[in-house]
Amino acid sequence: MIISVCAILFCVPFVCASLQSLNDTCIYTLDDSDPASSNNTRTLWSIILSCGWTLFACTWTAVHPNVPGMNEGKVAITSRRLFIMVMASIAPELMITWATRQFFSAREAAKDFNDRLSIQPTKAYSDRRDISGMTATPHRDIPEGSGSPSTPKPAMFRRLTMAHESFAWKRGSGPVTEFEGWTVTHGYFAWMGGFMLYVNDEPRGTLTPDNLLQFVDEGSVDMPVISEAEVEDRSKGDGLSKGFAILQLAWFVVQLFARYVQNLPITLLEIDTLAVTALTCISYGLWWKKPKDVRCPYIVHWKGTANQLSRLTYDQADLDRLWGGRLRGLIYPVVSLMGIEPLISPRAAGSRRVPSLGGYGKYYAGIVILIGCSSGIVFGGIHCLGWNYLFQTYTQHMLWRAASLGIAGAPILLFLDLEYGIWLGRNVREYRYFIITFATISSVIYITARVTLILLMILSFRSLPLGVYYTVVWTQFIPHF
Image (cartoon, rainbow, N blue to C red; front, top):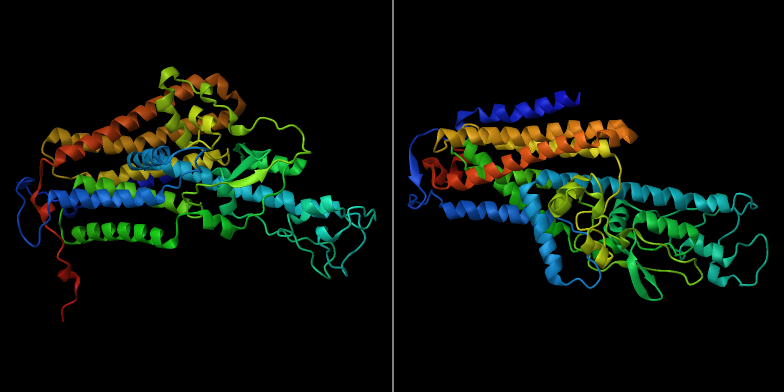
């Protein structure tokens, strides 16, 4: 079933690429140093700037970085963001995989908190008398020395009411509690490093959702009371900025479609920009509920009466688990973005923060891999739109076709390899070298094909088809009566 779906997706670009009208087949070319000067022409620089601004707008707006660490400056934060943007421009399918991992992790975190906290009051009062005709008394009004068995102690109220904001008693409905609950936004906020643990008024480290839920159950910390509106208030993204990015992409797509209708050729750079922006929009949708550019986490205080604090998740780097020796620094970003293993880099451990390419758990591994590999097939398929492009040499023409097929085919091999590893389960260690070798071959094919496409795009600027410089005549779309 999966292979049949991949085959259908794989064939769609070839049908579109076979249309001769999409790319000019005229043998006349125009040197880029002397484009035709006319009101209906464009220059090479205008093409480059248009694609560049579109890529920048989409990647800058789509990337939702994790919360930075303690004492990190603007230079470190900006450079880390630019690195993620470059990764999104080169391999957008990896960003989709990363965003999918975070989406499922955020949803599961919200579900875990809602399920765990919503059933605690029911268990605590299952053996109490019926209080359907009573109203709740705030714990601040209950005497500390009250020993009535029918009156819950203040300490218990603190666990259940979450500072009077998370639970409410309903009159006339028996011992029923209403928990406001966490949303996917809360789940994103927790996984991206939104909760910072303080011990003795000093920052100790970033909490994962698992750490926070464990400490709340143990009574070591109070349940953070923060609404979705408060989380969104910390976000630097809003509907206006997102709308501008979507309009920029929509305008770029409309121009390409108009050129297709008027039989005007498009450049290889525009094809690549279309592929990157199309996949970036998928990441954008997955991160729609994730807070953007949050700089300050929510402080969670460790209780003085609690037990001794154990080690937190982000206290120690674990790159030693990754094979590759000195090449670990190059392998780490790919492994983290693919979601194969949530690793902690030494810089992240030093700042006690969520890794730049982390912030997720191990949920729905098979579905995540399927979505990531399918997006890779689509990415290569969009590049197949240049199947009949007029290249300067026959060799370049064949290289473009081979590289497009390589990008579309490598994710299929990688998907089969990783799914085989998931199917093996605990026996994966016996075949780990085979799986690693197969994954390495797939990665080398993809990297080689991607570099080839970039080089061919640059070489194509030396002599572009004549029709590339002609602009769309928009008046032709106006009905004439």
